[in-house]
Amino acid sequence: MVLVLHKRTGATILEVPGESLAGARLPQAALHGAALPGADLRGIDLRYADLCRMLLSGADLRGAELSGRTSAIRTCAALTSGAPILPTRG
Image 1 (tube, rainbow, N blue to C red):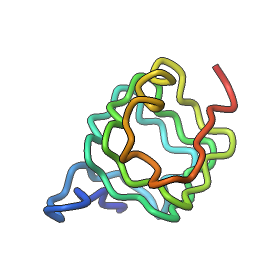
Image 2: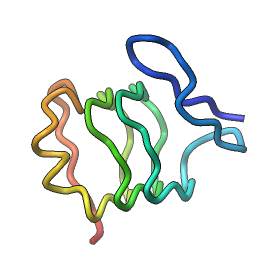
Image 3: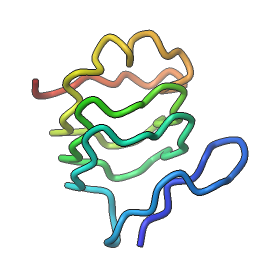
Image 4: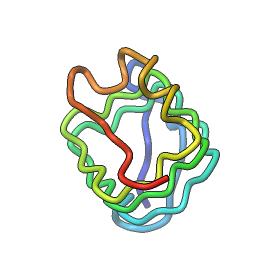
């Protein structure tokens, strides 16, 4: 089980079965404020998910499906803490 925690409170935002989030299918997931620095998110499906204020610095997003939130990603300044995040599909 993978627990996705809030970056400030440490509260559990989401529980995902498995050992990794790589390849997970989480379309429309509510992940506002989640902390996943350095996480293996290769191939994750986050179409239309709430990614605002997430901490994803150093996360591997190769092949991630981020369609539907490209503009939101650009407007959420705290999302990457400076690391570039670019959708590869969609």
